[in-house]
Image 1: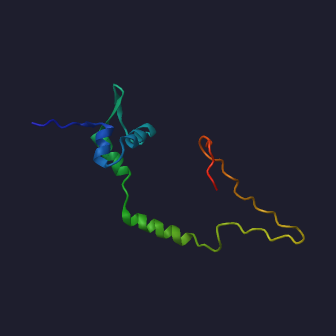
Image 2 (image 1 turned 30 degrees about the vertical axis):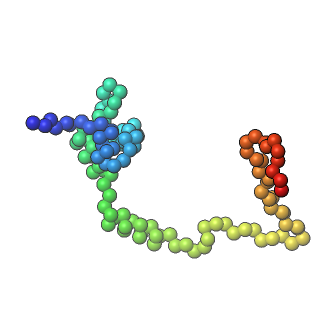
Image 3 (image 1 turned 60 degrees about the vertical axis):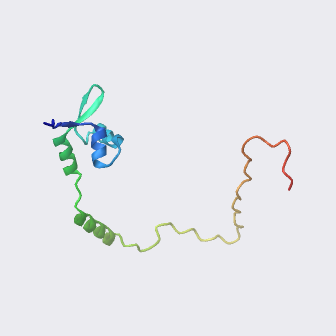
Length: 115
């Protein structure tokens, strides 16, 4: 007769859900996933895991509707970047700096390469 375990480790939950155990530990530390700590390791009750998954459940139809609603509300009338100021007459333009010469990495060569 197999013993049914009521508590699962973050490693078991991570393997079951296909995510990192570190993510499970982060949810526990943030208080989103209820757990107990025994001898320095976390254990999560199966019912708490089910409640956590139920709370984070997503309905794809609702998500699609929310995405459509948000796209309708945001009507791009102009570019999101600010327009540059108009040029002032009589003032010379400021030259843009060029990329500086990069220093070679590592030790300098004893005999420089011919050019």
